[in-house]
Every structure is written in C-alpha cells, then in structure tokens.
Length: 487
Image 1 (cartoon, rainbow, N blue to C red):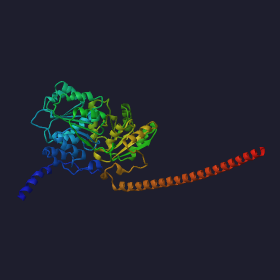
Image 2 (image 1 turned 180 degrees about the vertical axis):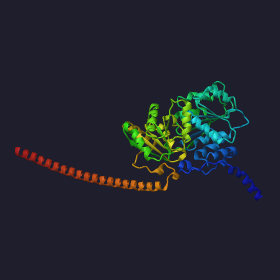
Image 3 (image 1 turned 60 degrees about the horizontal axis):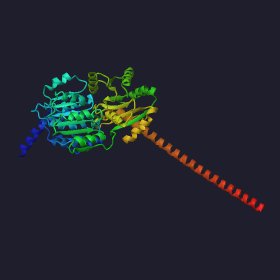
Image 4 (image 1 turned 90 degrees about the vertical axis):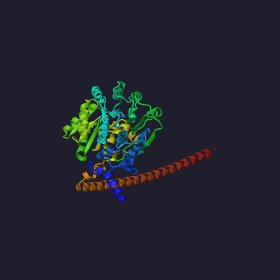
C-alpha cells in the first residue's frame, strides 16, 4: 500500500520535471511580496495545465495579494482589492479567470478591463503566458487597432477579452461581442476606470452582462467614486487591503536640486555613475519626451521614447523591444505609468517632477517591480519645491537629498555586484558613515555653541534688567527727594 502511494506521488510530480523553468531570479525582495502565509499554488486545486504555465512563467509561490485573491475569486465572490503596483496584482485575477474558463463553451467568459493600451497588451500577454498549455483563446482590443480586425477575430472562438472601455463598449453596442454568458468582469487600475471620463462607459457596458456575474476591482488607490460604484453594482464584496503605506517599499528615493538648464548635464552624470540595468525617464509633456530622447542619443546612450501622440503600432513596437531588453533607457510621458510590469527596470528618473502624489506613486512603481529593490531620482527645480514637500506629506514618505555616492546594493541584484564592486562599496559606505559622524559632531558642536550663546545672551539680558531696575530705583529716589524739598 505504501509503495503504491509512493508510486502515485511520483506520477503526480513527474510532470514538474518536464517543465521548462526560467532562470531563478535572485534579486532581493521586500516584505510585501515575501510575507506570505506559506501557501503553494497546488493548494488551490488548479488545473495541471494552468499550474504548468504558472511555474514556467517563473512563479514559485503566491504573493500576499495572490494568496488573498485566488481562493475568494475561485469561490465566485465579488472582490475589492487594494494592493501596490508590482506585487503580483495582475496574476491575482488572471489565474482564477483562467481556471474558471470552460473550454467546451465557445463564448466570451471573462472581460479584463484596463485603462491604457499598453496595460491591455501586457495583461493579455500574462493571460497567454499562464494559459499557454490550456488552449484558452485570449483577445486584446484597444482604440488603436482597426475595428474590422476585431470583428473578424470575434467570428472565431474567444474565451477572454482584454481591452479598454471605449472599444469594448463599441463592440458590445454593435452586437459583435456577446457578453450574455460572460460571468467574470475584472477592472484593473479601477480608480482610473471609474474617473469621470470612463464611468458612464463602464456603467453602460455592465448592461450587456448577465445579472449573475462576478465583479473584481483592483487598484493601488480607491477614491470615493469607487465606493459609489461598489454600493451600486457589487454584492457584498470581499475587501482586501494590503496598503499599509502608499509608497512602494524597496524603492530608495532621492532628489537633486538643479536649474532647468542643468538637467541634461545632471542626467549625463547619473548615467555615468549609476549601474543601470534598465531605466525609465519621465517628462511632463510629449514635446519634452522627444527632445530629451534626442539629447540622450546625442550623448551616446541607447534610448527609446513613447508618448500618446505616436502611432499605436509604433508604441507597441517600442514597448515590446524595451521589455525584451533591446534598449537600456526609455523616455516617456505618464502614458506608461499605470501598472506596466518591466522587471528589468531598476532606476526611474523624474526628469520633470510630477504635479501630484498619485502620479509620483505610479511613476516610481516602475523601479521596484514585484518587490525588487530600485532607485528613484527626482530632478527638482526651484518651482518644484512646494510639490516635493506636498508629495512627501501626502505619501508619508521621505525623499532624501542625493548623496555623493549611492550604495549599489540599494538597487542592483547581488549577482551583478562583483567582488571589486563589493570592496569599493564597503569603502564608500565607511566614508559615508565617517561623513555622517563628522556631520553629527559638527551638529553637536553647533548646538553646544548655540547653547553657550543663549546662556551668554540670557546673562546679558539679566544684567541689563538689573541695571534698569537700579536706574529706576535711583530715579524714584530722586523724585521723592525733590517732593520732600518742595514741601
């Protein structure tokens, strides 16, 4: 009997040996990814074909948001989940969506709604990667593709649609996409999807869905408008909140005060001093994106750029090539800031400082994907100083002045640091510690000097008061003497 059980266990695990697993990622991870309950993906009784896709994608065990979401989603409950960017949020809803697909039904069974074209492409790719052994048909549709292609694609079998609100509503309104048997409705970056721009579209889109449906909302921030939507359309949603703080852990944040004309020179210095695997550089306008990309190329560094005014096909190519490591640096506008997962990015530079805390949060999320360590550097002009203070206050974080030398261990994987680097780093750390001690000593001396000056000032004040009292007494005595003489 025992031998039979061992044989069955061996057969059950034999499929794992045939998997084509990626190289193990040895970069340090932060607590919001590693602090799990110890669950395994096998604990959720997922289809073997789905498990194969999960492991071959490099997932070892569920992250906290996946542990919280997957069993609840599989049970069919509505979900309202608040989690940071880069903690495995996409897989948290893609895995249960794939698991619930019935391949015998040639109907659309899940809609994954996202706010941007880039995020749609990435989410669809996650679906295809995790579901590659299942035979699930995934379609991605956004406003930048032709409607004719979508209509032709929907004549074939589609199980999951990933797309942006306007195009999805267009397809539903024309009767091309039939959502009458689509029971899974997911909104990623829900705060953006429920902005005044998108809310009417989302509300109208829901009218094409059956009454018995599951709605799952995921985002890093949930403004009041989300509560309004929840009360109106969701049934006792299971609420997940893994946001102890708004800013991402593992991202070291610095600022450098510069004049506008010094920014390119400062960027050149950063490129020469930092050990960049890949970097994303943000500008506040499309014109500045192109101008800066040209400057960086002239300095001799490889550089792509992407912004909203480019052709969709061109943006797709840039995004694909950058993600595959063709180029080291990408200059872009806030178009790219919501949920884009490029794990090789270890440095983010705000060439133009953002105007609000939400934009800042989504931007720096690019440098610490899936809990990995990263670096965010902000170039601050005199006009940005109030925004810097405001964003620090709103996010409850500290953005420090950039030191002369940045410790590479803050943003570089241990495997990429050689022994010489390590020794150099140790020396630099010692120098920084010595500088810190000297600074503290200077501060103490300054405080002692101030204390002495305060004591001297107080003593001087006391002496002056005494003199004034004596003079007043003498004056009063003289007045009394004069009065007595008159009498």
